[in-house]
Length: 259
Image (cartoon, rainbow, N blue to C red; front, side, top):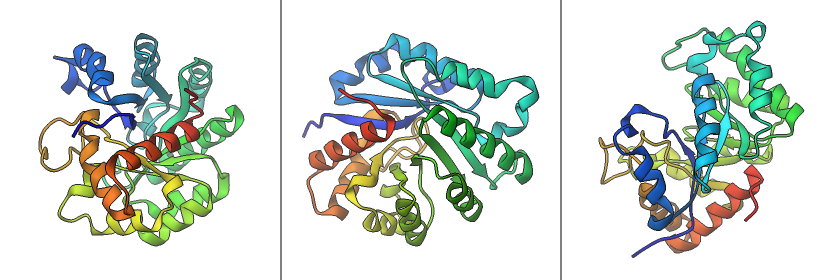
C-alpha cells in the first residue's frame, strides 16, 4: 500500500552518508509520499547548511541550533547566539534545535551542556520559536530545565518512561518517535506511545540513523517512516494513513507550518 502526507519531523540530510545521492533523494521525496521534512542542525555549520538547502526544496524546512555533543565548540563570547538569531529570521527556519543534554558519551561536561541548553532555550523564548530537544541518559535534568523554561516544542527520539512522557505532555510538549518503535527491545517506547494523546505525537526518522526493522543497519531516509507509523497506529487503534495524517497535522502545528 502506498502512503502519503508523511512529515518527517527530524532528519539530518547534511550527513556524509547522503553525499552520493543527496540531491536526487531529496528531489524524489514528494513523489514517494513524503510531503514535509524538518532538517535539524547540530552545530553552526549544519545549521547554515539547513538554511541553504531549505531554500532549494519547497518541502524542506529547518531548525538551527547546537547539539550537546557540540556544546563546547561555541560560547556566548564568539557570537553564536547572535548568529542563530540571524539565521532564525530566515522564512523556513521553524525551530531552535537540536539542543539538549547527552550524558551518554559526555563529549563536554554536564555544566557546559546545561549552559548551552539554557542559553538556547532562552533564545527560543525571545524569538517565540519551538525547540527540538535531544535527551540521552539525562532525563531528570532535561525535564527539570523544561519545567523551568517552559518552551514549546518537541522532545525528539523519546527514550524516557511513560511517566516522563505524561509530565512532558502536561508541559505542552510534543513527543517524537523513530524506528526504535520497531526494535525488539522497544517496550518502554511502546508504553510511552500508549500514554501520549494522539494530538501530541509526531513521527520522525533521525535519518541517517535509527532505521526501522526491516532496514536495521542500513542508512535511514524519510520514506522508511511508514514502518514505525504502522506500529504507532496499531497502538492507537487506527489505520496507518490516519496516523500519518494526524502526525503531519501535529508537526505542522508545533512548527507553525501552514499549507
